[in-house]
Length: 373
Image 1 (tube, rainbow, N blue to C red):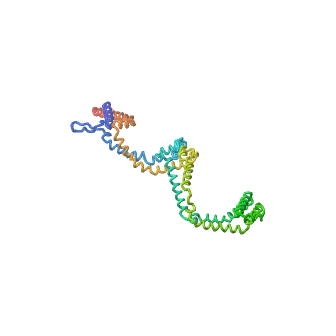
Image 2 (cartoon, helix red, strand yellow):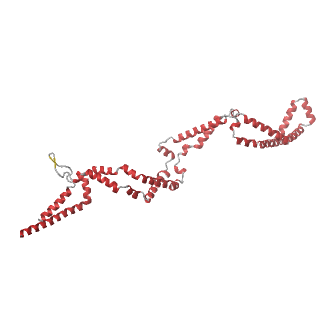
């Protein structure tokens, strides 16, 4: 009885364990489905998958779990270092030129386009300046402050002109000019000129006298007042004249072409784009390590932490787990479960045999006692 009980107990436990998975599919006799087919887990796989997905999302892959594992100071430091290393390796210290970066970004004609835009803008501004300058009188075009400053400097201009005239007439060149003028004047007067020349003596003497009188005239206070008044009056008339009239015949096209050529030469966009970023920004690594990378990393972690729960909901991890479990062959589920608890199942089988053997011994004792009576 002990042997039979142990055999029955062990076999039934082993059969129960096997029936968790076996058979994998339903068995039929005609149209009648054999009871307990398929096994428990194959028959309830949909419910198992759904429950497993809920368990994973509620107790395993929760937002708090991700926050504890991902959003830590250590992870932020590692992410910051990784970002800085990749930035330096692929961008800041790269030998790739600025033109190649633009080509990579889908702008192969950036140099030509930038030059065209710059020159078009410059020509537009030059035309606007030209239109503004030639649209009114000097008084309307020139700012009041400039005109006031120019008017204040007229006495200085007068003094400068008189000083230059004084120096010129005292020079040998000025004396020669006076002598030629006197000689030409007297020669043009015929006999009268000869008489005047005889009266004054040699022309050199006459030149000295004229030169002396000219210098007196230049140094006289009235001369300064007269010349300053003339210049002031002319300045007033000049302010009333149209600028277009004053600039009539001015070669605007030549000026614009010269400015355009100079700007193109100074811009030199094509040659400037043939250099890497490091040539224009040698301290980029230090700057980004202090100002850029920490800020970007901190912002990314903050936003990721704020959006984590919403993102997990959008991922629908429970549906993913359910779909994966549903797609597993039953053999895989069996290997998964048995791989974890094979020893425990064996112990259950042994325990069933032990309990069956013990029950058989008790039954044997009961029968023995009954037979004695």
